[in-house]
Length: 112
Image (cartoon, rainbow, N blue to C red; front, side, top):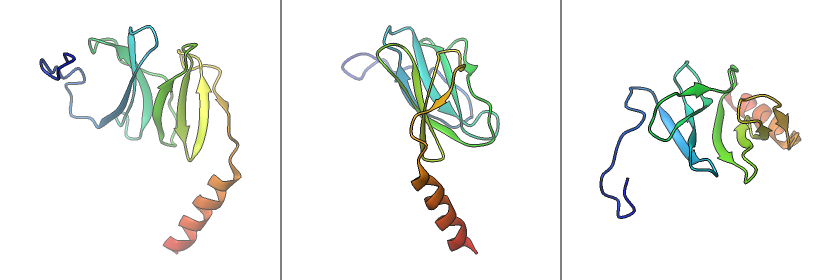
């Protein structure tokens, strides 16, 4: 898309749910969340839409990708924040949020 909002191009031209696009600091890649494999995972692709690659394969939903200035990726899973290398390796939980466990437990209790 041009700076004025014109010349819009669909770069994920598919029937999957795709969300949360985030440009890499060098402008070469876009990280995004997609439901391509049946649940939300983190992908990266070239800015022209080519070479989409899933970085995380996990039954839990992974969403909200963001790039750090040093080109690491951050994402969210079950109300936790993770950081990883651009190839998906070295994933580390940054928050270890016990509140997320409480929130999930409360939601499960409310369903019962």
